[in-house]
Image 1 (tube, rainbow, N blue to C red):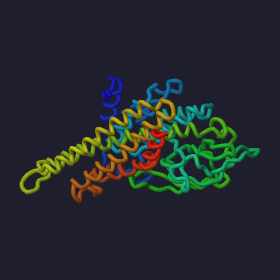
Image 2 (tube, helix red, strand yellow; image 1 turned 180 degrees about the vertical axis):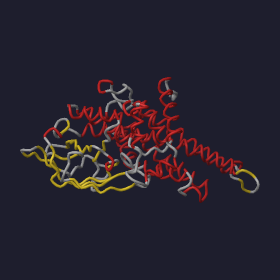
Image 3 (cartoon, helix red, strand yellow; image 1 turned 90 degrees about the horizontal axis):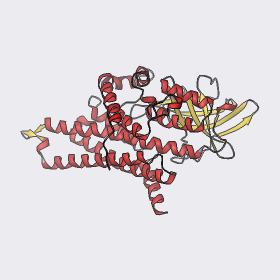
Image 4 (tube, one colour; image 1 turned 180 degrees about the horizontal axis):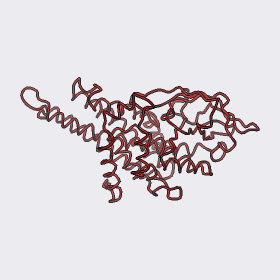
Length: 374
């Protein structure tokens, strides 16, 4: 497999890396996650206005640049390398994909706002009892003369506390449906319990108590949202895998650099053969992950079974590699590895969280086994 980027994607990567090196210093970004709203809105606007990455993988008909999965891979890897907490994957990949497939004036308008950097959209699909099974929806939506009434609970909606809009799944009696919630128009019926995740992102549990929405809040056909949601989940999984590859590249590089500087018994610890072997193993896990992610991205437009196999293979590979690389990096840094002052500790937390996003490692291992034996 040729993993080299085209000239256009290399320019995209180079420009984004330069921007992040000058505008996304780790200490400042970690401070921002712990104060105020927990993110940097000016960086999000720059993503849209200065770099155009929020629309890089979206079609030209809605104002995007007409890219695709490989552009998502390049962007997500760079964001992972810089440990960016702003919700690119959740908004510009997952939510934008759902909105585009649903169609309609309201959905298209929100996609255009995403590209312009004026909208942040969070998906509220997970429920506590369902675990990895997004299709097992207990939240309900019923029609009334004024529109729709939603009732239920959602858990761990990443990005919800900073969102302008939510995409909420609910059962309409004939299947799973998807609803667009403009948070600027909600006065009652929605309670948000915000939290900061272990990897410094913002999330929320939601309680919907007779949340009233207009008729046009329904996206797409009633009861027919699951195929699009399944695709969105695979797209999100592939994108966070690319993000993890970027994070692991930084972790491996920092670990090698530290091993060259750290002296023990009168010599750099990089000279100890046992540690050399361990760092080589970390590098091999990284490169296997990069290849698996590239294959998953190339299959995002394939038929659902092929897409699911490739994505689950990548997610399972990343789950193993992220655990191995993260834990060994911390061990090789000694007690410093888990301090707030050292970057490695922050990357370790992100690599741990990635293993649970858009399906756990165990979920994807099981799905891959099922898809390859039937």
